Length: 115
Length: 109
Image (cartoon, rainbow over all chains, first blue to last red; front, side, top):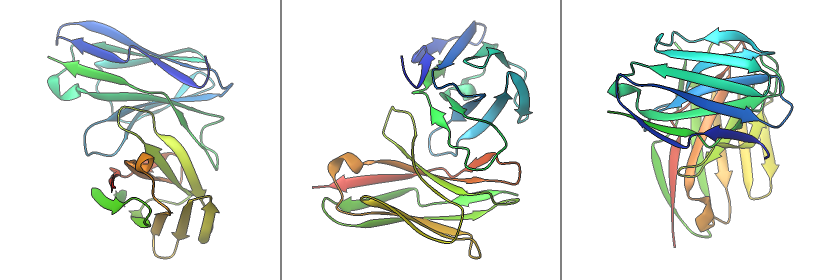
């Protein structure tokens, strides 16, 4: 595997379900990100982890819970979601966070539908 | 507040040239990125500008004017595979990226 991978690619869940999204990066990076992408809206930064510590949490509802067990893996745990949470969830990684020229490498995303 | 503006959609003809504009108002500026995103795929890095002027990379060029809060992405010799969304993003004072909503570029034969 190369680059940034995400599983599953597609997920349909009910509002009472609990599910998790997984991201893995094979680039040796130290920072990882979760973004939400809704149609015709800007990418919304949800969480940033640098060296496995959360450094950014952009007022995301508590029904989204991130976990970063090591610098290569990032999870997003989902519970009691709302239909408006349906979106493409993108994971990204970069060499570091909070420094110039912070090129981010993205995974293909998980298309989430909440019924 | 922080704001990135770019056109929602543009149409161009194969072989032609197209310019996608991006204007920004952010708390601090530490560079501007352009990404390309094909439908159903991950965004991929195209260019980075931190100083004023034009950066050329093959068929693609990116221009920045910090005093005007303005950038454009210029695509030459358009090919059908260039049909995609083009995302403008600015690194703010904390080096976090603020994103525009993207410009969907449609290429017609």
